[in-house]
Length: 84
Picture 1 (tube, rainbow, N blue to C red):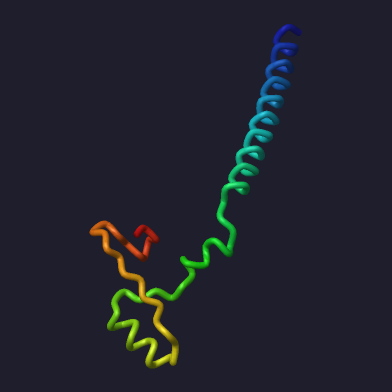
Picture 2 (picture 1 turned 30 degrees about the vertical axis):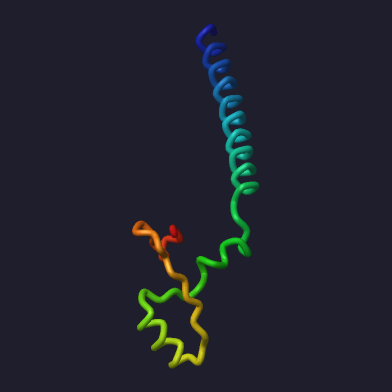
């Protein structure tokens, strides 16, 4: 009988821990949503980037579109990852 009571107690304790972890996960996801950039804030990463000016000029001429030129002056800049 003692084993049954201990087993039931352990089961109830583990169920409470799972509920606490689930609540904690929901809190973490809620905080993530608070800090996550909006779609509007991420539009720069949705632009159709070209890897060089020559490629951009060819594409602009073919598609009759303007070129938005960004010059990275730092040696560590990488426009494809968004780090300038």
